[in-house]
Length: 121
Image (tube, rainbow, N blue to C red; front, side):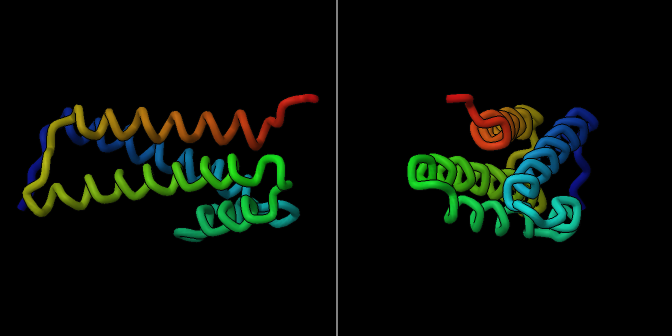
């Protein structure tokens, strides 16, 4: 049985909230005319919907959007892998989870700034 230090549990909590925030942004991106909350409620659906939306973005921004969504997908997978690795003898230091949290939040911010709040022009 793995028993995590309180500092690690707190760091895992921060990472979990950051991942959830990122998935919320992905659900909003992928919703289009659909219900973003319904997408958000289904495991894995936010990423699937955002990938689909990126495929249909305008040609001028399609590659950028797809890159941002795939970057988010990578960081979500890194967070899941790090957490699952704990039970296989992986790292349990809070710094690892805090590093992942920073990357998740950067993805969230980039998606929000570049896609949800488009620049005027």
